[in-house]
Image (cartoon, rainbow, N blue to C red):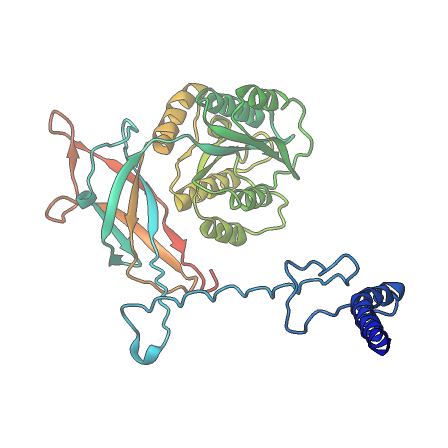
Amino acid sequence: MMTNAVNRLQLLATIFALTVLILSPVSARAQNSSAPSQAAPQQPKADQAPEDGGPQSDSGPIVIRKKPEAEEPPPPPAPAEPTVKNPNNETFSLRVDVPIVNLDVNVILDKTHQFVPGLKSGNFLVLEDGVPQTITSVRTTQTPITAVMLLEFAANSYYLINDMRNASYSFFRTLRPDDYVAVVTYDLHTHILTDFTNNKDIVAQALQSLVIPGFSDTNLFDALYETLDRLSRIEGRKYIILIGSGRDTFSKLTLDKILAKVKATPNVTIFTIGTGALLNEMYSGRGGMSGGMADLNYLQAQNQLKTFASMTGGLSFSPLFQGALPDIFSEINNSIRNQYVLTYRPTNTKDDGSYRKIKVLLVDNEGHPLRMQDEKGKALKYSIIARDGYNAKLPVE
């Protein structure tokens, strides 16, 4: 009996041990599942970097990747050193200003007023203040013209007005399609009838409007000064066709001042047509002429016109009859449209604004005065038309 009882106790102890062994993991799992809120979330390791900037789990924080710092552009390459260096690495600047003079020259036969072609650079001798200059080039040009018709239109004499009209229409007929012409009249004041235009109809209308004159005064000096001042703002060679009696009655300027203005205005050539020559011839020696102009005043007026022309390399005429006008303007056209252009570098290179006197001569191969003759061997006289000087530049120019 005792032995059976011991065996039962051992059997119960064994069953109890097995039961405890089986139930212990179940109880542990039940304990863990019954308290989920007490379990701490698993923290990522400090040394573990997030992948692609995303969270480790759905409930974890969003991690923003740090923006990469902008890369600085590479520095520009160093400039190449010059092959030739100045001494001591000093910087020097050089400015060369060589003056050049372009001189328009016309050579015309005195008898036929024809342009003389075929002259070479060796045939020209240019003296500047008496010093011979070396001519670098000579060329012949035939170009359109830019001209101002400066007309005296005053209530002084019908004959003077009629001469002016005839001369102005004669010049108008010689215009070409590419010529630019302005029409200006003067009495007590200056009147611009038309600005520069190549429309011949506009020029014709301006001339046709000269019907009733206003004042009887003729302020030639003031009108010529204003015209020269306007032309100084236009580039290139310009011409003034001055048609009038040449007298001045009430100008603010004196003769000396207008001569100084003519001398100081470059690239302008003046051609003058004197009016009243026939009337003066008819009344010469009678103490005066119609319109109250005495013989002496007429001669002085004509001399002023000749001076304006000669100073600028132009020509001056005083025709007695209207029939002489076509030949006169044919000579003017030959002088304007056909000319030699001489280029030289003056020996005097000072920029002092001084006036340089110019004289042009024609010479042969041996340096003697050039002689011309016709087919029969008869000597021909000729005239050299050119400006008598120019103003040198100032230092500020």
